[in-house]
Image (cartoon, rainbow, N blue to C red):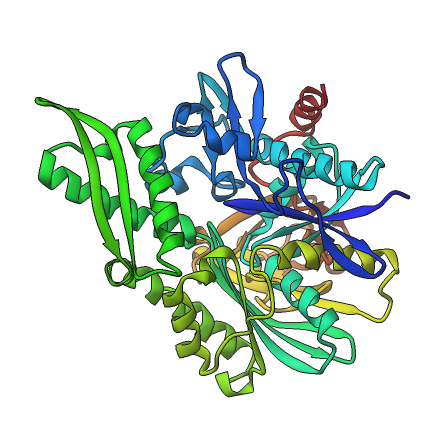
Length: 514
């Protein structure tokens, strides 16, 4: 069996690591960087450019350069309308309603786009190891639902990788930290990346890593902070010159690049200069955007985003039956945690300074590599007990969701519940599976549906059906239903209710391999 690599497939940047002598090692890419921009471009000839080379042409090729595909993966076009209105490229609805990207008239799925990034990580690892790589542990936000996890596995398959495990990003960070710091302790992993925010509470005891709870927001990340700066600059420019730069895709890309640079500089300086010459044309000729931006301005503008960090943390602490005083160490993960205001908010929430001993950009990939060692038996003294991030259940009368597996249940797990028919002489039941926290099923994510037929006709309520949910360590769900008394049964493995077919995955994989 070949080596298993660990990949942090990030919204903004991705990273790959491998276990070397029981220690996780981050691998440099071909350009010498330890992380790779999660960007994919198609040039005029149709050739694909990935990573730093793609980022270099984002201004000159804005509508063919895709970034942030992770925020689209496993989601419907109707769910990302607000996000789509702020992007230089076009989001279109696939036949099944999925959010895809229109690249020069060709619709591209987020799975295909992510596969190009994963394939780049695969090549980076192969160049370093000097051998072919076919298996990987890939990380995802802890608050990703089943559809998003399945879509991520599809992206791996297109890239020519067998995804051995889907690992939650905060859990990966805790593994990398805990393997190096063996003391029994309780950790809070505060993970604010480019597109998502996760908070996980873990207990480490005698080599057992137990996730006690997890919560998060899959629509809160560095891209949103960039958007605040973009709006700040664009609104001032519009007020002065009467021209909205956001309506021009090239100007928008230049604004995004400048916003990201300003955000990074304001993490270490109190002021920064934004200088974008020839950003637009006015009646008197070229117009330039030149202004000074202060850290205080940015922090005030981002107050709403900073406030959104608190509720998930409070919920995770409550679900773990912990108080901030019970937390021994706070780990800051993700590039956005370099922002001083984010660090200050974490201190306010947990009442203690966070650990400075980890690299927030690399620790998730390192944890994925550690997990590959656990799976392969190289780290036998480490045991991981993760949890499911969402309630899972069945739709019952009145659009109510009857929860079978509660959020923050340790996985793998199995749970059963008995339901009764609601009509006289009912000969079948349609079982609809949902995932989410709302009491009304229709307000949650529908995962799938199957039918148990040939039931014995009887008055309503007399025919009983036992429904069992089995979730594996990757968070993949299998459902079985059986009529009590006759044993008549049906079962289904919940695949993504939206996504690519096996034929599409194979076709895209063959195309990428060429």
